[in-house]
Image (cartoon, rainbow, N blue to C red; front, side, top):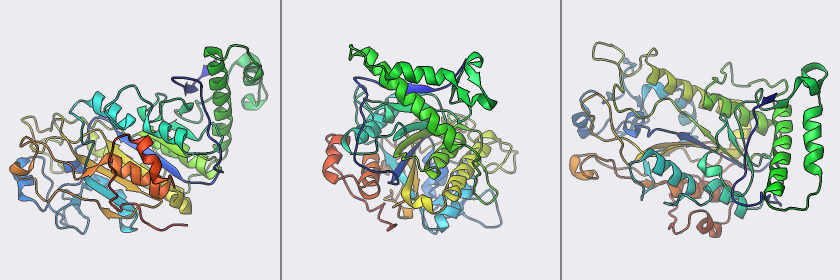
Length: 426
């Protein structure tokens, strides 16, 4: 039997929200797990301290004749890693926001702690994820795919909670079949799912675990039907670009398929993993003439592949991108100073990105210097933007959530509106 459908319903009976019709707004959260080096993604080329701190890792200021230098963002201080060059299409359109000094203010330097705390929205390991709490507090469509984890089978912390959320690795593997119970071409007559649905529809006397399992089973079966239907004869409309088969590529393809099929996907989570935990050998050796853009160096090629996937989604959505905000984030940045193995260690602030929907293009609040006396403990980049302010503004300005509900999503956080999502779209 093929059984590649992953479901997650935790802590109590699954719940659904009602009221909002399909065709609303969508928030897609993408996590760069491992602690991405924000100073490498968006280097402060206008700061001589950057070159002093990183004699090997520092990327040169923009020079059009040299592909190993950074790409100009029109700023005298920040520029873009050359491997992220595809993103310039979104930047030049005024739709890309870069927050180059973002962090969870009360985090630490543990991958596991920070990923959990960013997922829950506070230093608390047992509460529901902030995207699940959003669905609990904001009226939304009665649909099994209102929230989803896409491109992988494990559930992201942001989506864990009392509302059932499916995890879909890819369309072709998201199915339940048994050869004895299949009929027609491609198992068009799937008696296994028919039998499971009949069983799940039966009323039961015990409302506890059995009721939870029944509700999970119904959501799983409904999700399978929607995912399968959305992918039928799907054609990527991205000017010749296509999605990779990475976690990110699969997740973005699924999001586009579902949204363009009219599925009211409201909050989605996925990962962009390339090996961000760069303690050593962050760039090729000194004898390599393309130290910052060698397409044969895995860190570089996977970074560019991810940028291509993001641009493919941006193109593929067409005008539908006005209804979608994509946020790319990480648990922390890296040390400002490179270490002895041409790498960087766990730090504090890093670079986050957003595009689409109400995103106002440009640079978010930033530090003005990375001189040693401006750093945390003379090693770590301080944050200029708190991640909860970015997410909160997306929920309020893009998703239309009442600001009064933000205290339910991020308890105890004093919200600051940076005006990062003020673009007027229909």
